[in-house]
Length: 86
Image 1 (cartoon, rainbow, N blue to C red):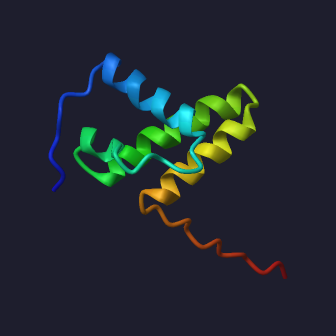
Image 2 (image 1 turned 180 degrees about the horizontal axis):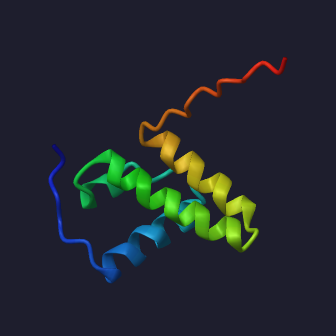
């Protein structure tokens, strides 16, 4: 299990600022946002909430950046299973 540190609004703002500065394409190796979460899953859930927020604002470029951040930290996109229409 990952070491959990206190996550408050200041820390959260710092995380988002660092992600924004790097534009999600190449997170600085010295910064690991996972250190502030109890698990990768909780980190991914927070990113998903941010994506939902930006979808509502129709800021799809930011959504794409956040998906890249997830992938850089081990997230794998689920396979889509298509139903055959008969």
